[in-house]
Length: 328
Image 1 (cartoon, rainbow, N blue to C red):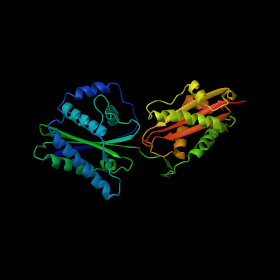
Image 2 (cartoon, helix red, strand yellow):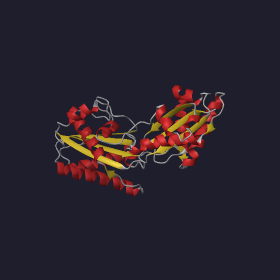
Image 3 (tube, rainbow, N blue to C red):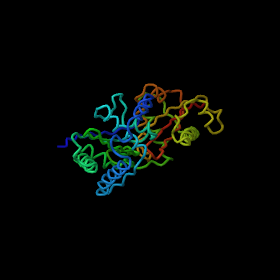
Image 4 (cartoon, helix red, strand yellow):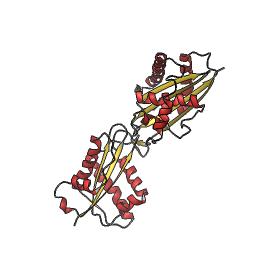
């Protein structure tokens, strides 16, 4: 009798902990497919993807594409669970599916998800039959089925390992996620020309509630904010937003000497979809309002003008930047 256990999880942005590299090195000494030939493992991965995409086609969902970083993350986790005899989305050291994906070379700013399964007394079932049984079990579970059919995911990885009648399988998924909704409905993309005005209105509401004079819109400060975000985009989002005043001052169009004081706040979200929306700006404004340090800048009475920019990299990362200035 085959006894199978399933588990599914989804996660968003997280930085890869430094200890992961030691963890990956320890995994590298395990047999590469733990009881499955390399060619047959590739066939099983093809079968697993075909099963998933068959389900998605039936529901008019875009098919997933195989991703080698996700496949490597799935392989590491399947081997580690088998070798150390545990069954969980987090390793004993606390690494998650997103940590494993980033360590394999994946983008930390995407939405990721994972389904895992294991069975005992599996030696009587063929490898293909085991893959099909695992897939059927995942589809019979609402949480696992949601990962397989998630329209916000685009990429797929899979691995299955076996030893002494035990088999572990891991599905991994990644995608840009979904843009935030407005009043429960999908939000429409917000034109670039309108983003600063929305941010100004929201921030001035916070200032009004704190009895602070409203800010005025500044095209020059908005240009500086956009310039700073463009510099990050050119580095494929690998760097943080420049937060020093020298970089900000250089980003200002002439005449720069009109500004007597400048400050900047920024925030980034991952797995947030591909299109900037008004709901995104509301999210960032609320994030800043809830942070005491950032809130102090929002309501600082010394500032007179505001510039704002919001960008999306098309893979799930969105970054917002507000520039405050004082001009006599």
